[in-house]
Amino acid sequence: MKEGPDIARIAALIGDPARANILSALMSGKALTATELASEAGVTVQTASAHLAKLEAGGLTAVRKSGRHKYISLAGPHVANVLEALMGLAAGQGHLRTRTGPRDVALREARVCYNHLAGARGIAMFDAMLAHGHLTQAGETLALTASGEVFVTDFGVDIAALRRARVPLCRSCLDWSARRTHLAGSLGRAMLAQMELQGWAHRQAGSRVVTFTSQGRRGFETWFGPLPSL
Amino acid sequence: MKEGPDIARIAALIGDPARANILSALMSGKALTATELASEAGVTVQTASAHLAKLEAGGLTAVRKSGRHKYISLAGPHVANVLEALMGLAAGQGHLRTRTGPRDVALREARVCYNHLAGARGIAMFDAMLAHGHLTQAGETLALTASGEVFVTDFGVDIAALRRARVPLCRSCLDWSARRTHLAGSLGRAMLAQMELQGWAHRQAGSRVVTFTSQGRRGFETWFGPLPSL
DNA sequence: TTTATGCTTCGCTTACGATCGAACTATGAA
DNA sequence: TTCATAGTTCGATCGTAAGCGAAGCATAAA
Image 1 (tube, chains in turn purple, green, cyan, brown):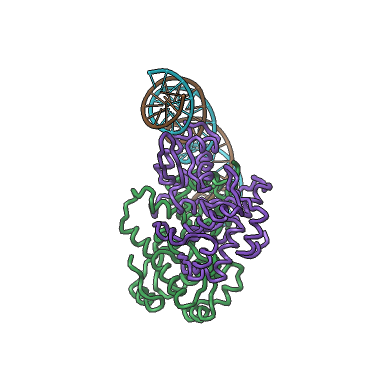
Image 2 (image 1 turned 120 degrees about the horizontal axis):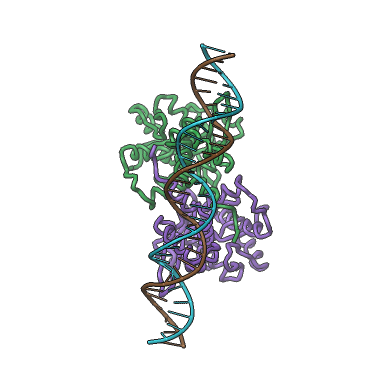
């Protein structure tokens, strides 16, 4: 009867609309302040403060204080994973009364998932790197091969610096829009950062959409091949 | 602001203790009746009826009527995936006030996840099959190789029959207790069924624990090698 | 110091939803 | 037909938690 962990507590935590909005906003990977999150969730700051306290107590968010600001972010990739999985359910068979607008198409093509690239482009990148033997996958664990190291270094990523951090280099992450795997971990984050740096893409403020410039689209195709049909 | 799918609705659905209990019970893969679920959740039948209506409306459960009985099961593997992911969060960093009892150890060793084998044994089986080249993994997709076909046929599984069904043969599924992948899909289900048929293991009524007989433990080691340290 | 800003705490109202008793419908057995 | 069992619907109760206004801290600038 009381088998396994206590699902309900965490699900209830995510189940409140205001908190769900907050968590969704944090899926952009950026750390946001309490006031920003309040406006994002559509509630007053007092209410948001209460919600944030609960989220933190529940271990879903991490908090960093800096001066009189409070920066909130997701507690980790595990949390992002659960959120993506939930989005998968909601998008798939759930109430799709949120009719698919132009915004939605953009989300499916390229978006930020916690802090790496997801959507069709994220999948395309992952598949291409796997197909060219730059990544290997065994079970849950993902690893960068020797050729992969050359590849990402050419791309402009400082692998050695990433290795020094304790964060795992490669992780796989499941996508809600296509139910496919893409690249997460510090490498995934670095690849996205590099694309922004090269002027390939930029994020829209307060949104998870990643917009690619025409130059970026060309560059992407050169490095990772064409996009699969959307 | 209203980006992506509506997480909150589904999370709230799972977030009620009674409904969470119902869903957890359904993780055994068996279809249960409304009254069984009511007692499982610790509420009266009327209350359970209301909950079941909501779960069905939310697309989390599927219902099959037979005579005056109503058999409820999870709507599909996607739902099971989300539940497992949530368990991962809850088990990992969440409130572990459900202190790990002997029951819990058994759950970690071998349990039913929707309808295939999970826990340490599930992972061991998956890893062994991958290591011996019986399975290949590319992205999210998992495939049975030629040698794998021989292997599972030797094990007593009728591959041809499984192929005729429209359900995917191989799927991977993430484990909450170890954050590792194991084998799902119709093959995963068939492997578990075959183990039970051979008298290796049996499920405890009303529980997700899978108990292995001493003969079963020997057989398991012969076919899939030793268990990793728990 | 004063003033502004970011966030929290308090007290209160409000509303939604979980729960159950009781009555009702449907299927099957005697 | 009558009885028993499985499940639903109705109505009422009750608790909890979300929400906000107002006041209270804390930090930083003027």
